[in-house]
Amino acid sequence: MNQTLINASPIEVIYKDGTKEAITLRELTIRQLYKFTEYFGSSNSPALVALCAGKEDDWPDTLADDSYAALVKEAIRLNFPRAANLVAADITVAARLAPAIRELAAAETLLAGEHSKTRSPAPAASESAEGIGSGS
Image (cartoon, rainbow, N blue to C red):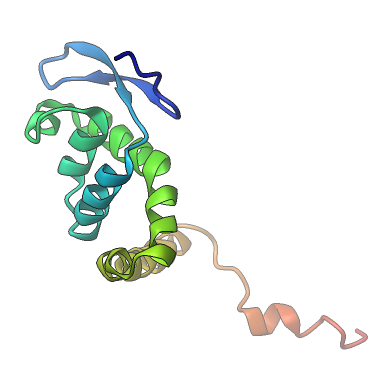
């Protein structure tokens, strides 16, 4: 049976040995989304990438770092919004994703702090708000 891939994302990957291959990351089926949430919740990005690419679990180990990173980003872009929609419908998905979402929020805060160290300091919120509405 010939299936048309909906919301598939073609991407060229480079292997550690320098060879290139065009692969397609795909939007997962409902059953695969449960596996996706399991991998996402346990921070198993290599398995998540392999699942979305339709490859064996050890396949990501053969990729160049930049290709692997691009695949992680695209696999999450394609499938996380749909997996997140399952949270409202299935408490087991909510329980699986909640710790990962908390960790992501903490990492985002940490990265924002590191990013602000590399830029010139902005005025504190209280300092920038002083002139607003004070008539000065």
